[in-house]
Length: 446
Image (cartoon, rainbow, N blue to C red; front, side):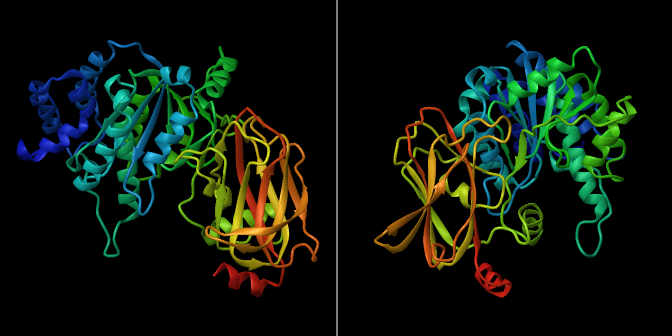
């Protein structure tokens, strides 16, 4: 890592140790930070000693507080048209109890040199989570662009080497910062939803494995999402990523790493606790859903979701009508409360599927509820003037084929509670299948 002038790194250095500046008030030690940045070398990206030395120096100060049990590490880059990191942080904290949050440190590496994005992201996070930053529970770091080695590009844009290199080095910096923060380190991505009480679930799995040795526990089967390490192994893993930063993608290197440390077989911990929130519907996503749900997947019929249940900006009602793995979360449901999908125009339906409850342990289902089909919408916002009962949920679930007479020109699909429920409620999805031939379905989707 090098710097030609002191001024050039003024903003970057401030980003690197934002939490230090806020909590420790030591601007006079910026000279040490710049010295370490200059000591780094683009020609030798395999060494992290200098970077680790300066981070450990400041970690000794932050360690005046009690060391946590788990560090959750996230590397974030700008994403087009979505909240990404902010949604992930919100999910992390909403899925954790107050006691679990005390056992957890969240470490975020802002891994892009766009100063506008950096400034905006830091301001947003600091305004939302200032108390956690001040107590050292949320740490933000940033490695300036000069920290990354030069990799040859192609005429068509980023080469495969560049993509591998940037991702691997960004995560090497993240891991080099984390060893002394906690006992264990959990790697996730910046576009995920977390299962409720994931910290307690991970603690249970780790406790049950003692005194057996392990290098890597996997709480997701998707890429490098949900991978748990011993923090003591992170310096070795960081150097391993830097050694092969151009050769292989991150997920391949991580999976190969555990075999080098004598864990020959992967250890998948089910049920999985982390899953991606898809930015938009794609052909590939549709294909995967179709394989799981029959000849063709749920149809994407334009519509809106309305509810009279409590909700926050994180787990919004709209999540029930998406084809990703997000969900709607609420609590203290009363008899008659509803979530209704209102289609933009009437459609002939032949199947409805409703899934409630956690995929982790089956909790938070709608204990008593039913699904109704509605017709002839009126008003603003629109609401159907007549409804017909399709069926009642069984253990919080429904997957029902709709008779032709009932499924004709449906405008609303309502999920209604038929009893009070004080506990939490998780509605994972309401999927709709349109009746008709393949051409009609394709026209509707378009």
